[in-house]
Length: 224
Image (cartoon, rainbow, N blue to C red; front, side, top):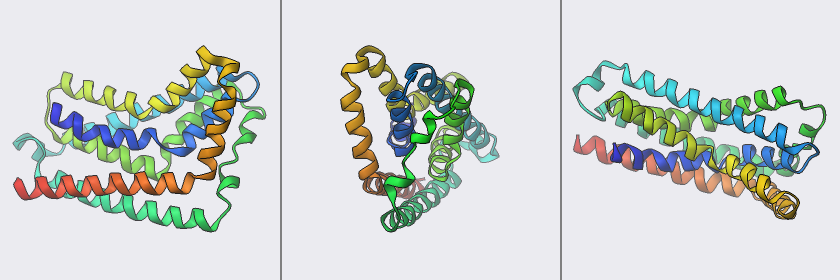
């Protein structure tokens, strides 16, 4: 269980550092009536992550080869391919971001216009269907499901993975809950920084996680 947990945590951290969900919750927190909409958005984000990781975990566990032992060879090959896809996707998106108006693409101020609680929840769910998020949740679910752990251990890792992946968005809501107006200037500066440096953040962490998947998959494939 420990090996699976420590392998999946970096993937969850990469999800946690996704720029769009963080900027979205910051915009909601800095708008009128911040708590209701930001909490609903966070619930949608967290719930969507949990469903995706659980679904991919179940899918990986249903593959017959899993019964022959933890981390079968097909899982390592899949890890390598996912790592390559993630790096390529990161570089392509990063190049497009440099040639476009990144600040405009991350201008989510329209969220504050007519966004009800249920719509905020739905928007949080929709954040989970972005290509990068799908790739990372596939990688996490693949590693958990292919490890052939018992139900309790698997469920525990899925929950821990989801908590870590949603930690930044949840953390910002918690900080605002206790700090309120005192933290608003800091949250606004963080929003501006993320918008201005979105391309760099995306590329650095995307390439690092992709490389990690390739290295781990290759090492385990050779040693299996």
